[in-house]
Image (cartoon, rainbow, N blue to C red; front, side):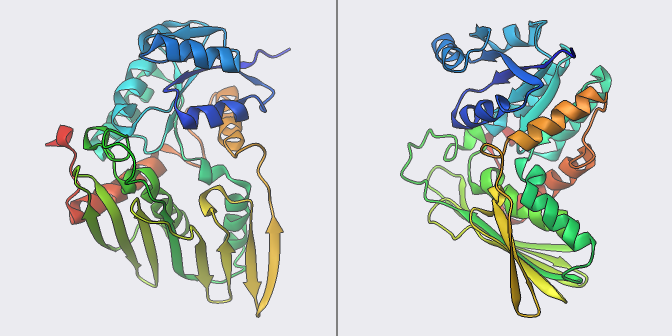
Length: 327
């Protein structure tokens, strides 16, 4: 019997709770260890999800010889350092989006992965969602013709939270863009590639973080209109319009359970419910890649992550989003 892929988790917040529930659905993977800077928190998480080890420091997890791959779910500002440190202990990495806060961090992460000959992937779970997979297939087949317009938004009210909350704290790379704006930007990039020009405007919160950002990506023969915000709610729909038809991804589109295809004024519904919450598919991708001794995914590779952070850097440059640790 082939040994299971043994996982460790760093950063034990709400996302990690969702992730580990989906991890239990992947037969050839298992949770072995969890780590937090608060040992009590690690022990509580470990007890809830039955991991073998609970560590009160990240380094203890990195040193654990029974862990093959580490999932990083900390605030953005810690991603690069934790991933790089872990890779020097020979661990494979699945790191929450954004992979790093800026291009410089992401490049250092790729260098560490190459130097240590380990797998590294950005945990952009939407890329592996069955609906997104099917949509890209239909578009590649030319079903809706040439794409001319993409619209995607992602917004929810969060300004009622404590100012030290990761979304509102500039020292944790807070704001809407890197946390949720990354999804609309990802969709435009996935479908249309890099734009020729970017127009963007942001509004800022009292803590200094950007709280809403509107973006237009301009292509030679198409446009994408994108939005993210923390000061109000949006429908969280996505629309892809082509010369022959259109695709509508229902709310919340980044974790779609299906979509609608419109051709000749006729609507066809595609129901594609996810297994678990939807993290299952990126976990399966990591498992398959490591099992095949591949150091990056073909569905979302290093160049894709570099392109995505480059687009986010460009938007930030146009809107004046700078974090204190970058100055």
